[in-house]
Image (cartoon, rainbow, N blue to C red; front, top):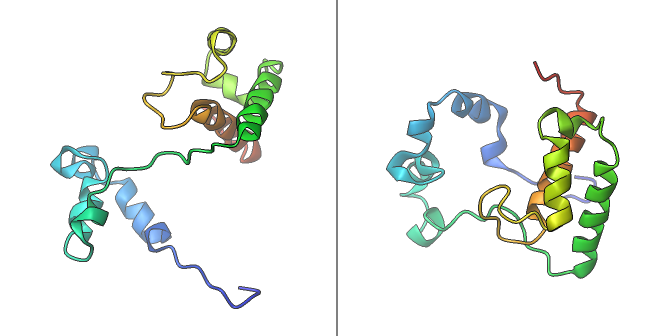
Length: 136
């Protein structure tokens, strides 16, 4: 806003997020597809090519420096067995998977880019740490 640009993200309105959080999962997947409820809600507002396009889970980065940075960061994290991530993920299992292939293929379903899984795990660790999430 400092330069006169205002971004509006309608699906991030806290009231909508709070409401949809409590909608049963089977309704969210209306029509048997992810975001089915949202897609039906906007079907008359958007062209079908937009409303029903495939979900893009993670941006692909063709830059080899990105892949290298993610690999280095995950290796560093694996040297910290008390990191918050390991309250959720078995440290030894992740270390073995990383040693076999640092891209961690197949650990979280089919992700569209190499290192997407590793980057996701780094993000989860950061989130757990930064917001001091309590796991009960």
